[in-house]
Image 1 (cartoon, rainbow, N blue to C red):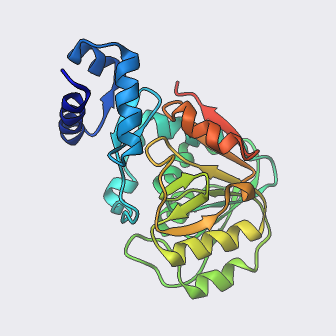
Image 2: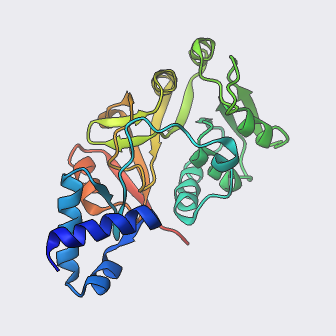
Length: 255
């Protein structure tokens, strides 16, 4: 089978399964795993898919609307749990931290430390409701118009943010590339930038599915991120491009 024929079948499998593994493709087509890797690299260069550590996933559109709350706040997969667990471990006694309303933020909640006292600032009604009875957490909800998602990202919330100084902000978005962190909507991007400006340490949470993808509205350049937490499915090529800019990356291992 010629390479172009394999690529056509790989795209069909990707459409059906939303993920392909290099080893499984090598077995299926009776070729070496190096041949499959070359196919996947070529297809990524053609803008057909996105490479991951062990295979490939579909290429995301530039402006992907966030998932509805019923999906966003469902149980996190093992990769997101690994990122969330490591992120939560960075919170120290008496810290003031920003935790937003993305799925990775929600995944942090079960892992938040319980033996120390700290402050959480959030723009998410869902996050605030989940934490409001925790006696060891001082909780502040950023004010403004509440969206159907339960998040608050309007101009009033931007003014509200300026009243806080934060030790850590945990930022995420629709994608992360060598040019920086980005998200789907300009108002969310502006809010995240303002939060970063008020923060001593900016930590980016980015799973392998969005690593290497550029979303619509730019938030921050990579140089502004103190470090990035991702999972072990993110490809070495994607990691190397970011590391070359001097930003530290932590690869969180799933249990």
